[in-house]
Length: 80
Image (cartoon, rainbow, N blue to C red; front, side):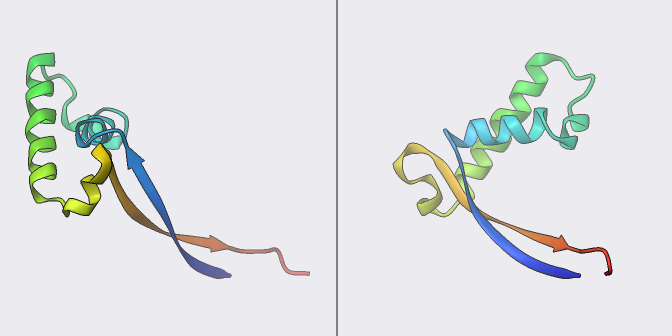
C-alpha cells in the first residue's frame, strides 16, 4: 500500500459561501438541524465573520476565499 499527500487549491466565491457550504451541505449540517431559518442564518453569518477576520489576507485576495487543502490518498493493489 502507498499513501501520498495531495495538496489541491480550493476556492469559493466568498467566505460566506464557504461557511454556508460547510454548515449546510456536509455532516456538520447536523449542528443546525431543527433550528429556525433565522437562527441558522445568524450562526452562518457569525462564523463567516470570524473566519474572514482570522484568515490570512492572501486567502481573501481577489474577492474570493481560497486556500490549499491537504488530503492523504491511499492506493492499494491486489497481490499477483
